[in-house]
Amino acid sequence: TGFNNVDLATAERLGMTVARVSYYSPYSVAEFAWALATAVNRRIVRASIRTRDFDFRLDGLMGRDLHGRTAGVLGTGKIGEAFARIAHGFGMRLLGWDVAENPACVELGMRYVPKDELLARSDLITLHVPLMAETRHLIDAAALKAMRDDAILINSSRGGLIDTAALVGELRAGRFAGVGLDVYEAEAGLFFLDKSLEAVEDDTLARLVTFPNVLVTSHQAYYTEDAVGQIVETTVRNVLDYRQGRRSENVLVPRS
Image 1 (cartoon, rainbow, N blue to C red):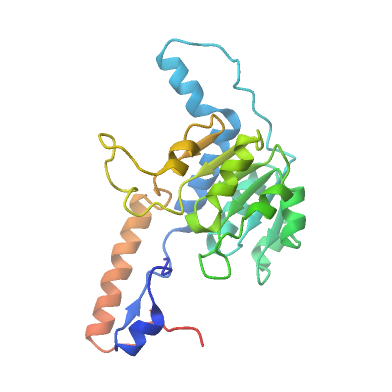
Image 2: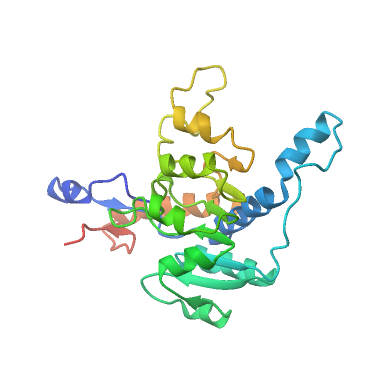
């Protein structure tokens, strides 16, 4: 769905048509974001690794009930709405931030507030906004400092939404109950590839994965049979629409 790597103005000048997959299962990403939140909150990965070594201690595995706490959803489109429904089902209060309110989220009891208020009040913060010039480093050093020290931060959208260097700095200071990242702002050339036998020359990522309260996965939130099937269908439809001269709502034009 993302098109942040395409220069739409240049494509238009060259007479190129650019179409995107505007929609696929929002549940795939929302469910994965919730899984990340649960995993970092309850230290599930650490517990699993210990169990493999027959270490059955509970030291360092303390989590918190999410029921009754506050989830802040930055971006309340289809994926943000799907996440809000999950969080609501688990008994969380909902805060939202977006350019426009989603009536379905309001029906769930979501209150729309300014971004800084959402960051300061939320126990769990999840990002579901597109990456554009206006949203790059939406979570910058100031935003990170506005969050609670025991907040959980989840990003399954685009890596560039977070200033990773600033995040590492806050983690080194001992902040945040947990951070779950399915995306990374310098993931190009790393994610989707096997680098296990190579020296990865990315000191920021190398430091990020060492924190015990951080879980990084390799951009797999969308990766379900349902979502991939819809992606393939839409891609084929885009090609056929173009070749047969049909108007497609998925064609992108540069913003004026």
